[in-house]
Image (cartoon, rainbow, N blue to C red; front, side, top):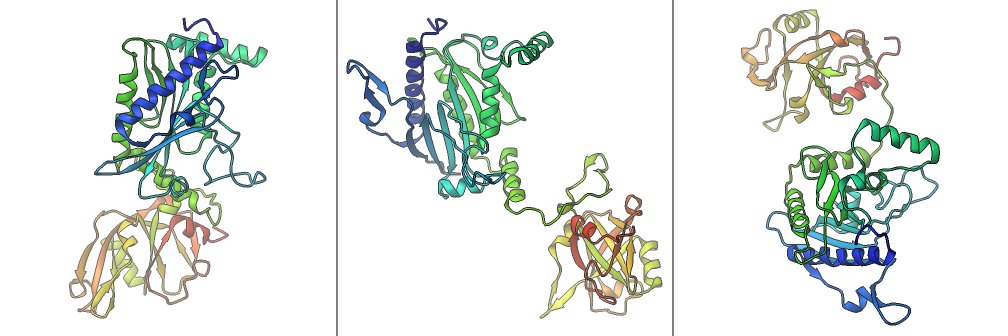
Length: 411
């Protein structure tokens, strides 16, 4: 029945899927269900009924969770268009497609109830997942093709000869996932027997795949989609998921463009792990008064950072505790060479009277254990370009990006 390719069968399957998904939504959410007149219209001949095809239908409600209440919108034929000035090269952070318009058959949109939908879009706190109904195929290979070298070679040949794609359905899911901002999932619904999902990493979202959904006495496949939606809701309630962190950092890095580009020969790794981005790599710029103090620092591999006192309370920049390096700047040096790596993850507070050569017995110091990091020895920084006056000893915290921007031009 589903291999014939008749348009009326495809349309009936699309309508049937809509009501199956609507029933699932009603099981999990408190919905404002529209009237039948809003969902259905008569055919042109007056003898039949159909969904308002080609027109956007939406049902909105909420997910009453004790941990993270959500708003949800279930849409049929929602069109995602490019917003913003068409002359701009980017439409971020506007919602919709960032290239050309896209219209999935069905879309679920979730966002925290504490925000409006517009606020959630701009702050990367909304999640869209899409479904397309495909009635013409009844197996996974019919949808996506066989995952073999021969099949890929055949696809490449088809692209060269006539511009067609054998796995167009899979590519369309990738298009939804990539083009529609804040999309975390795109899936095909088809009258087959197999489900398959490719996860972006080890969580339920982001992912792409297909669910079998067959009309019949048992409406086979409905329970699998229901289970998937419950997994999605459980995932969206997790405030420390990898996807949640990724969306936060996407928001942070896109919120404000960098003031300048950084093209520099700096280390790629820290041990065996990828190095921090330079604008998240904190460095404490410290001063020393004379060569005797510098000799003590290099011999003990410890820098004692004086804590300022204000009304009896000791003050210190909190980013000092996250610093990966320190820069030692002499009393009258115009330039500083290299960096010193912080080796102890937890600096210690010590009283000045316990320190070698410290007359300030009432002072409080932060002991930072360090060692020379030879990977930065080829670099030097200009005091004037760092806006640090000669004789200034007040420590400051900079990022590696800012420090590299003040690099000595001849280094």
